[in-house]
Length: 531
Image (cartoon, rainbow, N blue to C red; front, side):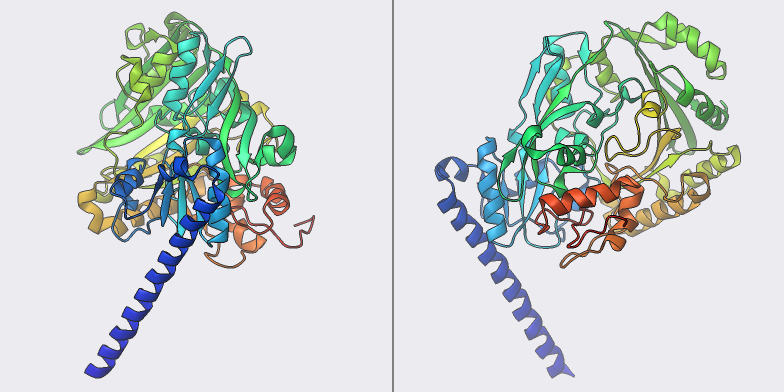
């Protein structure tokens, strides 16, 4: 028996050493290819990092926003490249193909399953952190935005040029625009102006052949696909051109909290479902529910495209139960409201340029779309679940739809959650790194919550938001082909019937499936029109 154990251990060591040798060979092949392919290798060599570089770990971890993927056991890239110019990216793609390495493209690092910087097979990260320039044309009301910019940088650069122009991007100002826009991307102006992806008018993408394309050269099918279908399936997006929107000189904000125990928080939460999704487009009122010790708090936070007096009058008309008073409201500029929505001080505005995010922790996300108001007793059940020990750091987060979102057809972009969706509901379960040993318990709670919500949310399919990625929905095969039927299991919740067109586009532009990951759009070798 002892001899068998020794023999088994010996073979395991051989397998491990063999794996490391393969990984090292792939890394060496990639670097050798890069040195031969790049016309100016010296310039790109300064932005190429391997585990041998002293900066490798700090660069890898700088943009990780879910510390669940910072453990020693998390797969690490063979190489990280942080290009400073667009022309440096095509050689990276071509050499990754030649060296049998997959590509992960990272903009802000907010992928909730870590897919922009984690892979189960040998891979290279293209980290776009150095591509963050924003060029605003006030007269045309447009902006070119490099894909490594954060939402905060975009907002700041727009406000530098104009106090009456804005953009309907993310609420979280450290979110990178590369992934945010490509999955649709919501913010506090979605009821007025739609999603970020709805306001993209051009883009630049590098395909699997290393060719740099704009809207005219990529064609309308691919352009459609990357404005809601996730860019990582189709290439490396390097820049967006967006249509800016008009914002008033003055907007009004408020943040009101009501406890469940003493201030009818559940009743107000229940009533909110009937009121805000049907309200005027200028009004955004989101809801955050969380627990502090044994007290459950329901927070209503708002950005209104207008003055305080008009807001108070309107809220007293449509939602008097909330009891909004003039003293609850603050008038400010639109750019200041982007900080307010992040629960940050509204000055100095330079805070928007900060890419780092305080207080990151481990996270598991679940998302749903609610099309019929959740009954009061079900809301009370959600509160009961929130009092369980594993939900200590959980929040329920509700984003109202309606308004402009009701007017845009489901097929206009790959993002299908439009008319009839009252709001997006997210259950975001956080826990500290000190509780990493209990990760399974927190994830198990998240799944129990998701199961509990089944009768009260959309169905056939049960819809989900792509930017709140959830691998529990299903995954592709790590190696080999993934069938349309297998991918449909996770894809239909994100895209509904738009998935079919996404498959067609993928098959046309990346038939060899170079750009692949756990939930990438798969190509089909023989596409059947009626699938």
